[in-house]
Image (cartoon, rainbow, N blue to C red; front, side, top):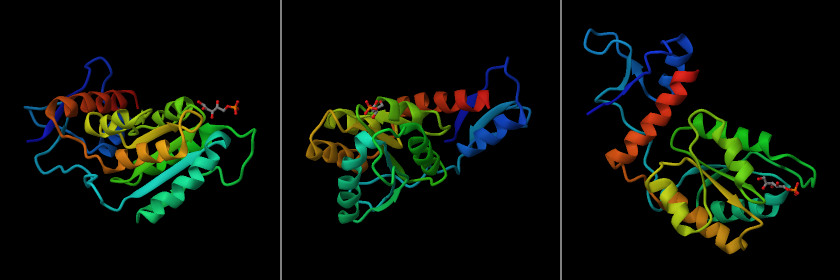
Length: 205
Ligand SMILES: O=C(CO)[C@H](O)[C@H](O)COP(=O)(O)O
């Protein structure tokens, strides 16, 4: 059964909204029964599920605070058979700023359905905030195994943010492993909430 999203009537349906909705797999209904409604039809399929042991393409980014952890993570993920795309920083610079790298990783994830992202900083807060500025990104800040897994199970998060100054390298790697291995539950209540976020994004573009 398709997922239907009803737009707020006060925002109108502009071309940008249609484009944004299309990026999320929605089409605008024109029939008498669904005028002005975005819906995902019965044939719509989500991007390939993230299954345990599946080989993934993973987009990573970090500022100076996450630089060393990123290097360890890239090796760790490649050793596990994943394809890693590194969006920087490509050299250590104690004065660099996290937004450009995290925005680049977020945009790459959205442009690459089925992929995941990892953004790393000192706390992970700013990195999560930056990634979430990209339409289509759902970035979860993970600070233990449970929050890493729940980011996938409940939120279908496609990006995980980690604070390199908050954890040992081994802990941080285990959060990413847990995130990558965990599938979205697909529970209708979670999907409904995710759809409301997509509706909000579509309504403001
Ligand atoms: O975690 C971060 C953002 O949320 C940054 O990595 C952190 O703010 C960098 O701090 P500093 O410039 O003092 O090294």
